[in-house]
Length: 181
Image (cartoon, rainbow, N blue to C red; front, side, top):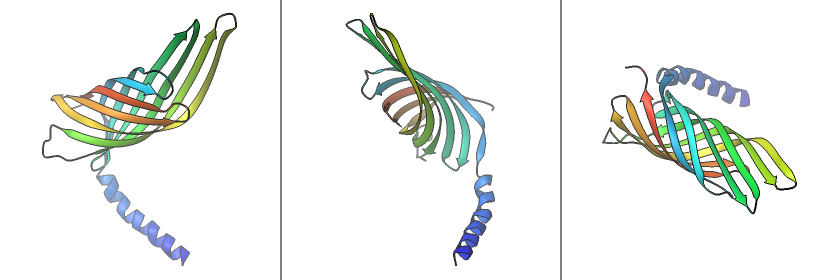
């Protein structure tokens, strides 16, 4: 019985896979840059810089995007300095809602990323101490995209990054440039 269910499931997947693949439109479609306001958990807020690439759609209304983001927060209290930085490299999938106004494209998204974290502390008279770690993170967010010209879009986004010991809330503004015609 288990074999029959498995074989029928595999047959159904094999039959529908070409249709799903035919609806995808993958490629290097857009690239852009982002400036954000980041509020890391347990650390003061700071600004972030990022770049991203839009790789098209993997299914109708589901886009694929890769990104590289950087932020660093430093503090100095009574001569003791500390800093925490995060370099995140990840991929996100966005569900693009259809609206009656094609100039406004709301979306929600989810993604995974590798976070390269580094913490440093400098204590006068004792020297500097640092620790680095690489963590897997989950991104949940959403936003809105609107064209500002035929080849350029403006995006406003909110992302929640769930990373062990370094959860973040980010507000981002981004510009993306369309490649090709």
